Length: 281
Image (cartoon, rainbow, N blue to C red; front, side, top):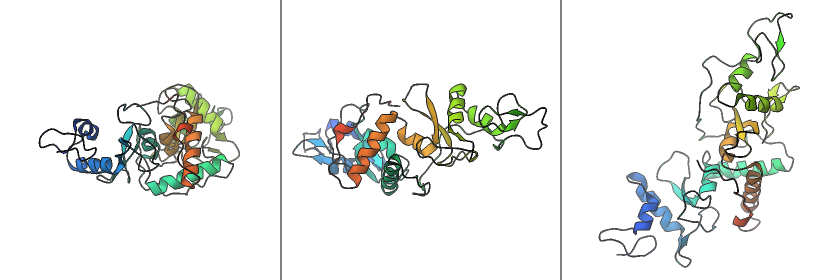
């Protein structure tokens, strides 16, 4: 009996060769979905897998390579609805359905050309927050109640009056959520818009959510070079999740190439992408 994916010889009573059985690496209800994704993506003439989204050739031997095969849930969190793609694309799409992802990519590309980013371009239907929750007390700008002029000090981030040594209540909670506090303080200082009195996303220019940590627009800190402590920038949580394994230039190039492909301006150009600082977690 031959492998149902590639046709190679299998062990008795096995439908998959040893190599593709290892790739599936799953039991239970998603085993069949993964097998079907492999069957759809297999090119028998080239004897390799092709991405179901972009049609580029995929690797299947190095799980740390950004072009290695990966199983994407078409709807995040919905089992048994899979497509075969490459690791890097699966990462930046992970919080979106394909329809949402297409809209986000095209909107980012337009924003890189100077168009204001439409905060409501998608509904973020499948967003699931991750990471550390902020302190239980609600964040708020400055202290509750009046601050006496003689005792007031400007918050080192936003400049609002406070009786504490460095931060107003809001900025203290944002800075102290995680490590690298001085680096994050600098990122917040650079993102603070004194006219609008809001933090502004580095990547999209939208106003960031400061209280609801479950919001996709909540303040997050992006390492411009993955794995390197600084510099960091304040951005919307959903953008940070998209970019997390890419450098600043690598992310822009990836978005640009995806947008060009999605507009139907030619095949996806795998060689255009840059992964010199790819950070596999």
